[in-house]
Image (cartoon, rainbow, N blue to C red):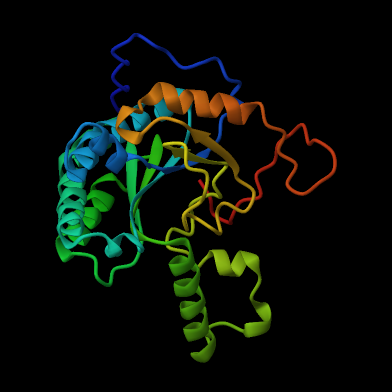
Length: 267
């Protein structure tokens, strides 16, 4: 199946010439700064979330241009339920509508959409739209966009441990056979590779409970730009920073082949 190419950036900017083996396969993004962006402009926080939609999809197009194979976007965390009821309601509806609005566009680009997160508490209408998008795009292989909705790194590990315990109790799994490879098969999207790059915007420098398992050997890059002001050029700059890093994976000497200790069945 042929897919359309990304729309060129309005500025005419093109991706930097980064050697293919130095381009991260999986970039996990903490899209931070929507609320501050809105506050600076005297607007309600919801306007910041609305403005951030175009940033995400411009970044996805920029990732495709650069050759990144997977993007994971932290859209709603398990901790976000503590926000005001009005903001939570807005975010639920907004995530649902964004997925519905953008699924055909993602399909045209050859993007496979996945969902990582917990079903309990999440609006059924949000889950339905995520499932429709997953089914529509399941054969695409240009890039995978994992929408992390009602997601938390600790929740993912706890849910994996619970499912492992259930399988051990049912006799489907032997406890003494559990290792890291086995555990990884119980994550929300087990075929998703470890994150080569965790990229956070807005200047904050923490993981905020995002992809704790997948971030074990990630490079961390922080950008001092609020998410609604981000476009693909900021992603390219973050990847340039990543490409200059020496990834050793706990070893003492640089490895010229830059291996990726990833989970089984990765893309």
